[in-house]
Amino acid sequence: MAKERLVEKKYLFIFILITSLFALWGFANDITNPMVAAFQTVMELSAAKASLVQFAFYGGYATMAIPAALFIRRHSYKSGILLGLALYAIGAFLFIPAAEFQQFSYFCVSLYVLTFGLAFLETTANPFILSLGKKDNATRRLNLSQSFNPMGSILGMSVASFIVLPQLISDKRDAAGNIIFHSLPDAEKASIRLHDLAVIRNPYVIIGLVVLVVLIVIALTKVPKTDIQPDETNSTRKTLSNLWHNKMYREGVLAQMFYVAAQIMTWTFIIQYADNLGINKATAQTYNIVAMALFLCGRFIATALMKYVNSSKLLAIFAVGASLCAIGTICIVGKGGLYCLVGISAFMSLMFPTIYGIALEKVDNQDASLGAAFLVEAIVGGAIMPPLQGMIIDQEVILGHPAVNVSYVLPLLCFVIVFIYAVRSFKARQKIATLN
Image (cartoon, rainbow, N blue to C red):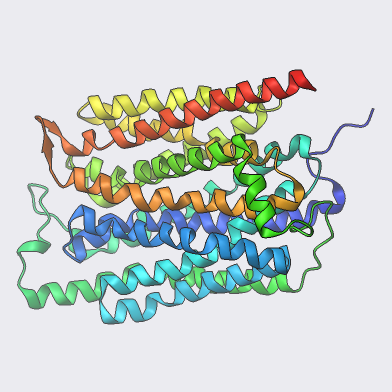
C-alpha cells in the first residue's frame, strides 16, 4: 500500500510558495510586538495608549477579513494573495511619512493598512493550504505550513532585538537603571525622537521591498487547480446560515478570538514584564526570541504528535500547560515568573492552526473561504485585549503585587476557554465518529 503523502507532488511547488507567506506575516506580527514598548518611551505614552499599536494592527484584520473572503469568492485564491501582498507593501511604505511627521497616529494608520494585506493573505493562504490534498490530513498540513510562521516571527524579533531596540537613544539608562529620556530638555528630546522613529521605520521599508519581489514571483507563477476552489455554488446568505448552524465551527471562532488575544498579550508585554525586573528593552527582547524558538519547536513537535494523538485531545493538553505557566507568571515575582512567561509559548504553538482546522473540519467546501474569513476575523481578540492589559499594567501595583504580573490573569482566562473548546470538540467528534 502506497504511503499517503501530506502534500501531493503536483501541489508541492505551490505549497512551498504559499507556505513562504506564513513567514512573511510572522515577520510583520513579531517585529511589531516590541514596538509597543519602543513607542511608549519615545512618544512618551502610557502602556494603554502605546498598546493602540496592537489595536490598529489587529483591527486591520477585523476590518478586512470579510471583504477579503468576498473578493476571493468572486475571483480566485491567486487574486486574493496578490492584492494582499500589494496592501502589505503599501502599509510598510507608509512608515516613511509617519516617521517624517513624528505622529503616533500616522504609525497606527500605517499598521492598519499593512494588516489589510495580512487579512487577505491569511484569509486566502489558510484554506488554500487545506485544499492541497485530502481533508483527512488537512489539519496536519496546515500545522506544517504554520510551522514556518514562527520562523518569520523569529526573524522579526531578531531584527527588533539586535538592530532596532539597541539603536534607540530614548531607551538609554542611568547607573540606577532609570530611563533618562524623560528628564531631557524638549529640544534634545525632539532630536532623539527624530532619530529613533527613523530607526523604527527602516525595517518596515525593507520588508515592503521584499514583499514586492514575492508579489512579482507569485504573479508569474501558474497556480494549479485544486479539488477545492473558492466558493462556487452557495450564496453568501446560505453560507452564513450553514456556518451559524455548525456548532463546532461557531465555537471555534470564539475560541480562536480568545487564543489570539492570549498570544498577543503574552508576547507584547514580555518587555514590560522584564522591565519591571530592571532589564532593558534590548535584553528583554531576547526573552521574546527564546519564547518564539520554543513556539517554533513546539509547532513541529505538535505536528508530529498529531499523527498519533487526536488533535482535540492534544489541544486540551497544551491548553492545560499554557494555563499552568500563566499561573506561574502571575504568582512568581522575579526571574522565575519571567521563565514561566517564556514557557507559555511552547504550549501556544499548536493552538491557532489546530483550532482553525477543527473548526473547518465539517464546513462544506462551498463555504470554506467565508468560514476562513470569520476565523481570521477572530484575530480581533488581539486588538481588544492588549489595551485592557495595558490599563492593568499602568496601575503599577495591585494589592501589593506587581500589576504586570496580575495582568496575565487575562491570558489565563483565554487559555481556560481554549481548553473548554478542546474538550467540547473532542466529545463532538467522538459522537460523530460513533454515528458513522
